[in-house]
Image (tube, rainbow over all chains, first blue to last red; front, side, top):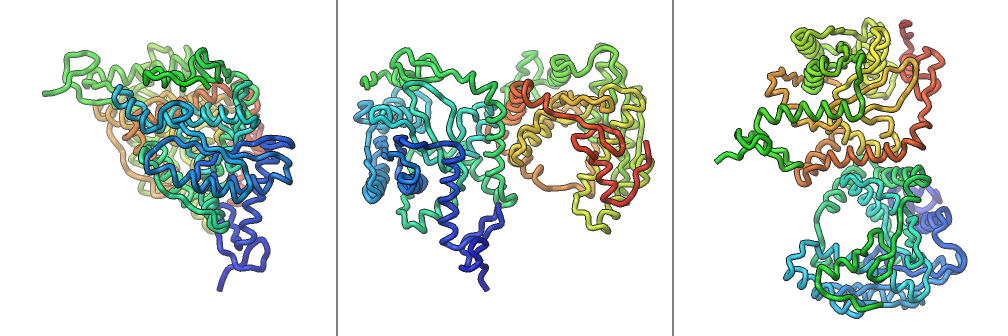
Length: 316
Length: 316
């Protein structure tokens, strides 16, 4: 005896959404999944008419699903969509992701840019890691990579005239980040990390996160149903530190108390709402004294990093 | 080769405080431990001259240590100290704790009250649990117990003219509570739960938590050094639910990342600071329409509980 879909009450259910108690058939799952992302975009005004959105696509399932969904919404929401994939330069790891991103963009008819650390900074991530090791810099490759990747995406967005950068952060990522900030004693940072972070600077292209309320496992199911190719190669530099512990803990909690991840992100949202009047206006975005790009510091992290590495960043 | 105490640089260390990197001898541990509690009281103005403080003592190590510390500070801080132990009425469990609390209070020369659910409400916790089961009420005994115990402590404080109730919540308890609130999507509740919750009502005696910044394991060590008798009988009703999972998780995290519990509580403190102007004034304490006691609801939880149980609460 199979369970019937709680939405259409006709087709057999294939997905049990534990936190809501719904059982969904394939069809209703897809409709419902897409509706949630649409509602997130509308409710938080992530995209408005005439926007030019640059989707940051790594080639992983989350970002391919994001690209897929945004492509579907282009006409309805009347915005222009382009995509970018960053080639950090990691031997034996990156090429497959780039290929998948390119294929998907081509299929969807989206202009797609591949920008590389090598072209932008003069060095691949592998080369930078080597220099850092020689110089005894203790920063983890993930830290370099994050700083340089975000910078490059922002610069590209500025160049191509995009006024939004869409990233594929999902509910799991966001809940983990809230807990990590709490654990580091830096919970107030969450105000910089909402679905549409309140950061404003003439050289900063605002980021939006249409998948912030979508659980990672549902994205995986959607990708499977939509036959989006999965790319499961792990970066050799991956850092299995605190985030991994938090991920496991939240997965266990979610298993026992369905809805935990949603509650955490909702906690953070309520907090942002309350802090809107007080903390948010205090987030001062400065202009880096060296390169003129936005930063919360006097010298931005990219310039600081290049200084530490003893190499000069090519001017943009 | 033994490590030397990082404070006195003379005696051998016996306790390694991982989150600060300090190694302490027995003597310096005690001095430092007491100083932290003293500083917490002074910094947050938990106790001021002329206060009459009612210490809530269960008989467990945390509350006995609290009693011990407050007794020591009576003269210096010029306040009056009395103590209360609640006898919830749990067969085979409570008597040892009451005995320990009585002994300790006698040794320290502190007036000590034992108040029971039976006298105050007409029923022991065992009897209430039985009624609840018969009526099919799903609330856990811990929930009844918490509501009724806090109420009874507050009523006693009012009767004896205490203007503060000191509880023995420690750093571990407080960090767990922050995480539980976060996970329940109710993070803003932390503003009601600080070291000195900002709740004001003519019939509510303010609570203070002098041990909020003291880790549970240090309290255990202090109790051992001070030969405070340990009472490790577990309540038969104990609820091993979410708090236990959170406790284990935080202990694991603290092990790998010393300082985690402090950071969490500090996160909450910063949050309270930021929300002082906005959320705190919104915490409206109402007056229960039935009994006239303070509550965040129209009908307080005690009256609601008695209604559900179908028994009438004796008037105070």
